Amino acid sequence: MIKFVRNLTKLIKEKDPAIHSNWEVILYPFFKVYIYYVIAHFLYLHKFYFLARYLSEKAKRKTGIEIHPGARIGKNFFIDHGVGVVIGETALIGDNVVIYHGVTLGGTGKDKGKRHPTIKDNVVIGAGTIILGNITIGEKAIIGAGAIVLKDVPDNSVVVGVYK
Amino acid sequence: MIKFVRNLTKLIKEKDPAIHSNWEVILYPFFKVYIYYVIAHFLYLHKFYFLARYLSEKAKRKTGIEIHPGARIGKNFFIDHGVGVVIGETALIGDNVVIYHGVTLGGTGKDKGKRHPTIKDNVVIGAGTIILGNITIGEKAIIGAGAIVLKDVPDNSVVVGVYK
Amino acid sequence: MIKFVRNLTKLIKEKDPAIHSNWEVILYPFFKVYIYYVIAHFLYLHKFYFLARYLSEKAKRKTGIEIHPGARIGKNFFIDHGVGVVIGETALIGDNVVIYHGVTLGGTGKDKGKRHPTIKDNVVIGAGTIILGNITIGEKAIIGAGAIVLKDVPDNSVVVGVYK
Image 1 (tube, chains in turn brown, orange, yellow):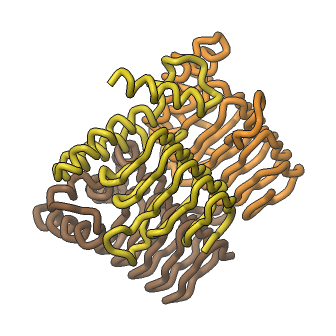
Image 2 (cartoon, each protein chain N blue to C red; image 1 turned 30 degrees about the vertical axis):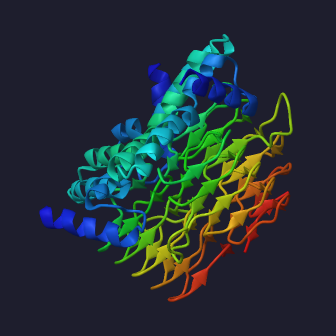
């Protein structure tokens, strides 16, 4: 647990130039929501769906960030600010991904089963971006703020505006 | 009241594939905000404006969804996720309308009286969409995620991007 | 203090046609967040960074509006609705500026020092707009809802869509 908090602290300090001291990390909404997510995801995997959803809703009320307990998230994930973030049940997020506030990893309502995006390692997703459907965002891709992404994005690419 | 809750439960189960049990509906922000709205709208119609606004602000703090108590809403309305939704005082919403998070039904600041949109029956409005002014969205129209809509939309049409 | 509240009350009444009585202003999220900001900014200037951030985070939990305590804001500033607003540490806002919900005054991650926008006097910024980087929005500029702004905007101009 201590190691977990220490890593999270280190990560937040690296990502945000506005931070002034170690203690400030406990004020970060991501710090809070991520701890809730870890517990909710554990409960979800053991089929305690109600309790898992309860925790994720509670975390959302506190932070404005909605991570469905079913989402699978890699190492060193970071969400900055975070109000309005929605991450769907079958979203799959790789390592070292950074997401800003207002980002949606959602469904189109057309798919069944895996119906939310897959985000590969080292992707950065700008504020207000909406990514819908069972599509894949390739490694090291940069998705500009406010983009709408409806199809696969290749590795190492930069996407702005509507991409469909 | 029981019938009301039962209908709301049925509706939410129909709309969201991520739900695992009946009980989960009480965790839905829309479940909460809609109950607040019904009471606030009643108070508003009887000119208890302060109390009505108080309830709608309280609901917004809990859910991130802001429905002005003056807005008029039809049957089977549903908001998914909901953080960032703003529905203005003179907005008029038909039956079977579905709205995602981040949607604004707002004013342009130029109109007086009826200054917010009219949404006809069976419309679906994607995440992050902004609809401004006293315009009409026609029946069964689908408004894509992130659209900006500033003029009337005909029945049965699909709108993406900036529409003005 | 009384004068401060009176001015804020007058301002909110001027800006929002949906208000029905003086008392309603205490329900406005901006009323709340602005009082928090004034205290947090004072603490920030005296280098009580932790306490300042604590207050701004608390205000954000209550209102959905995130104003970094370091931001500098002129007279008669107003935020309507406000969920999803993010104002960065080095943002500089002039007098009589109006901002709607979902607006970001953020950084690109490339600059150091002053890395957030400067907003001149009498600017209006529509809902969902994202303005990134150490750029300047000129006097009386109107930024349309949902715009993405990545370079300087001249005085008196109207900007819509992606501007880079």
